[in-house]
Image 1 (tube, rainbow, N blue to C red):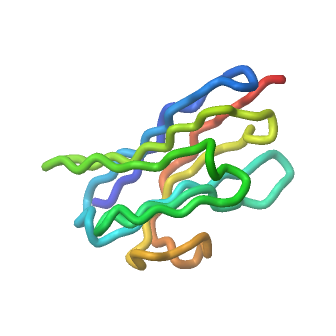
Image 2: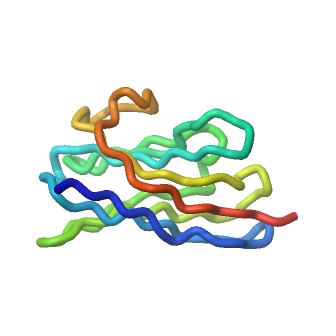
Length: 126
């Protein structure tokens, strides 16, 4: 059974940091790219960052480049993708989702992502 479990959200002040985790199981990790998306209240969901687990290639949206870092940890039974978020701004407030794509170099077209985790809420206060 494929599972993506996002966690790590919370309330933080502007300028602070959070690290989100996406625990992945049920498929061959290196065959997939994992991305983080977010959806702010009243807005459409948007891509934030993506990592290709075959070679570690990363991609960021312009809005988070230089502040967020995506990484992955390969383990025998469970693999995890992290999103380290520094310099958080109120406009980063959103529900964050992780998703998996068989297209290693998928960008942020949602139809390329076959599996989705539940969201984790990040709230940044000003």
